[in-house]
Image (cartoon, rainbow, N blue to C red; front, side):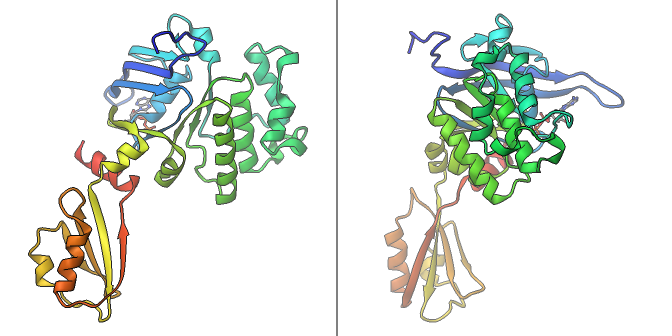
Length: 320
Ligand code: ADP
């Protein structure tokens, strides 16, 4: 949409040739943490930012949050250039940090009010009570932050990041160390925010979570974007599929017809099954079943399994 204005930008975030080199310090030489990142994150998406440790994710997020100065490149948040319009670009983003750091002397209500005040939100426009209630902290509004559990602190940090109603929310490893129930609750809340129009960017180590939550996923490695596409496109990049066959008699050898067929892999399972890995684009599952039947095998069960994001992640980061 060429008519996009800062009020309705097409991209919630536009990052062009972003570079960051940390200066040498102590005995360490300088470190090029970001080597020319280009990313355009569509408004309204739930965007996953994945990468192994040291890939540059925190550096990128800290630049977006205004906590680290970039070396070069440009960042536009909600259409506002970070250099030309720092106030508006900062007001357009909320960041939930990884660390559960909260001032122990303030209650959740006070912490939210202070945060809103820092962003110049007038008292009449503040949403402290609504946000705290939506985050399940309604009955904890006025207790000391010290008495909050880890999960409650995490939710309060989300509330603080939303105190100025930013259209873009970044969650940095939001569910690290969070139990499964709370994780589900957090994701339900994130989905709700997204339904209400908030663009969400999250980093996570839980690949299955990115698979479940995100509509687009970028993978960063060694300071570069090595993949950036819709989740289904990314998943469809995997050509490999595995078929596991259980027969009337346990498999003890690989049937010669299969061994000779140019499959990617055939292996015997400890439970007597046979796992056949093949290329979806080159081999039709029917062909494989014919080969098994022609080997006089009495098929009792067939299961197919497609590798997920985990496999893509390993394949991509191994080859980069
Ligand atoms: P990630 O969040 O993906 O684990 P980081 O952005 O933390 O990656 O780190 C990227 C690279 O930059 C790493 O090699 C890291 O050691 C280096 N780095 C991060 N912060 C600093 C810093 N303040 N000074 C020097 N090097 C840093």
